[in-house]
Amino acid sequence: MQEDLQTSLINTQDEICQKFGFKTEMPPQENWPSDDVKFMLAEEVEEIGYQLINRFREDLRTYKIGYVFQQKASSKNGNAVLGKATTQADLQKCLHGYDAIVIIGHDTWLELSEDQKFRLVYHELEHFLVDFEKDKISVIDHVVQEFPSVIKVFGPGCEADVAFIEAYKKFQEDNITLLK
Image (cartoon, rainbow, N blue to C red; front, side, top):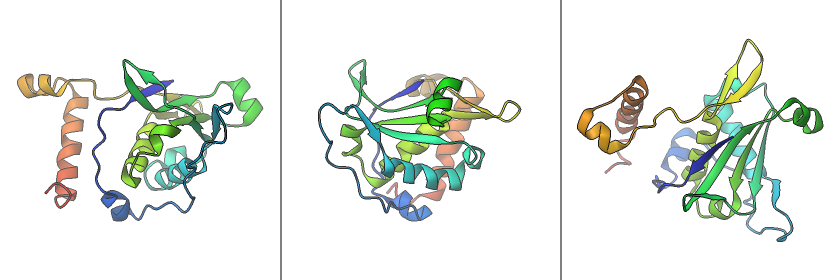
């Protein structure tokens, strides 16, 4: 299972969603049913996942991914864990049919803008790697592991760092109005 920590998500004011035509029709689940309920299906997150997979991750289209809210985001080292990505063992797949699950902390979800919600779900989907030979999904860790201060002094240390920098430069070019 891959857990993601909340750092301070940059708010792009829903500009990216507008740019790609992303929108949610599903009303947000604002009230949690009761303290006894720890998890529930997240239809709003599923709707976002569906749009993102169709636009960016066609390799995931044939897999069944479940989307779940956890009542309260867990924490790690004092930081809220916004989301988790996990694959399912054969027994779980037999019982409920899902190949993988995305778990989102409901309490933190309520604080996110539309762009931040799409960013979080896309991030969690990026943890899934498809092995086409085995027809199976696995979970991968983050590609970029370096501290910005190290890159500032020493430059990129591996191809993942270079790819990250190039991706950010492309974002800057494509979204110059957002960055002013």
